Image (cartoon, rainbow, N blue to C red):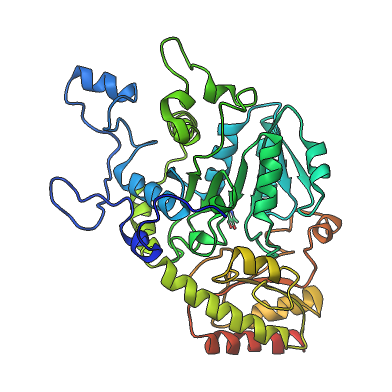
Length: 433
Ligand SMILES: Cc1ncc(COP(=O)(O)O)c(C=O)c1O
């Protein structure tokens, strides 16, 4: 584990202050919503400089907006990265990252257990664009991983705590495998949040978030973020990443030369996000920033509630299995203790002994817990996976992904654990009927 820069202050302080700039005209304390499409050039030369990226001022809000910049800097700071950007959704963050690394004909290696929306994108839109994603079991040998790497491989992709089954990955090992192969490790750390785990400390190069989840925390916005760890050597691996190490046009230095450690994020911001335009509205970012300010406090309570609920669920006869690495009996507990010492997140997934019929009765009996898709809300949420998020898969594909007929994903909220358990009891009583 590596000590990172930017940690002079404690997390609780940085989640409130990092990246914030006091508005020069009004001295407003809270980061304002800069709801503007563009920015007036002071004169002809200023316009030219802004377009050439030679000015600290901005040109257009598609890829540069002061409210969004504060959030990008704050999340980068909390993750221990060198630069960050917020975009319109978690999906957009994943797509933009891979488009900034790879092109048609290229290849990405990924661990098997990933959020189904990501897997859907990998076998859908990305494949249609000519990007091939190949899955490897997380615990495959290093030789097995190495044997899958080709000259067209551009990244290894994983999730810190995979949604929905919580099979915590061995980040340090994956980073080693990626770096031996000469590619960056890209980690979707949505479920962990930077409060529970900072993948860059374990060797990850790029960290992605759906900020719609715990970072915002209130369930009122959709957004995403990408953070550059700043330590991947693009120059040394320049054959794989020519767009980062060669001059984009005569007279202009390469991204690696111009931006050094921040080369990837600079490319993502000034090329990928500029060209594709996955812009998040600054009004959403304003709400995101308010969420981030209380992240540590909320996560402590999410963890305490999740543990209490998981311990209770593990004792219930209607529940065949509980996937929550915070439980000492969970197969991923030891790894969680290493990578997630503050707690193993707030997704508790249960397999109901009575299968799909029991799941239907469970969902329909809930009164406090909201049956809906989403995670990372102050409210406790429940979803039957096989009939919703994983419904497009065949039964065989579902079982291969560990999605059994009775599987319910719970996102444990901030209500009192007693009230959450009382409602889950109502659901289990119905399930057991
Ligand atoms: C782990 C993970 N990554 C990415 C996403 C996509 O994020 P968004 O819904 O903000 O597009 C989700 C959504 O559930 C997720 O759980």
